[in-house]
Image (cartoon, rainbow, N blue to C red; front, side, top):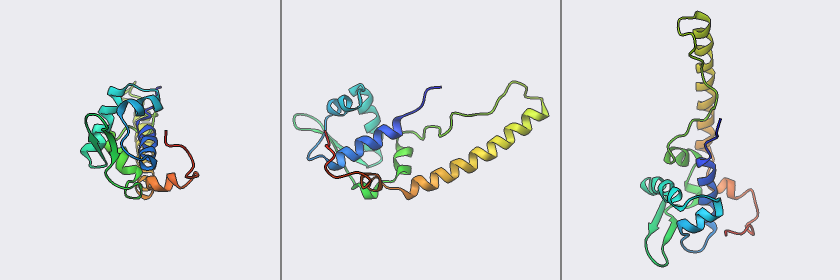
Length: 142
């Protein structure tokens, strides 16, 4: 199953933006991530709509942070990129009338809900500055 890397990619981009002097173009971000600039613009637009980044069109334009890294949580960005599913696991629906399948699915649903709740609490407690502080300031911003 394919993993959704939007959260990881946007955290990466935002930390670079936080360390970069001036705006970064969609093309520069796309080259950094080996992605299509159109996909970058679409994803960054969601962050702009939430007030996390600014964009300026034209020569000398690009993307900049609208808020400092210490004001952005992982939960903020998770929500801004569309709240991708946390788990690749899911219930089976092969035998909807089977009481065992129902019990298994109910148990899994409870476990997944509890685990996701704990993850969202942790996401809310971590800022992008917390991540940025884990490596030296000398790391290039590309």
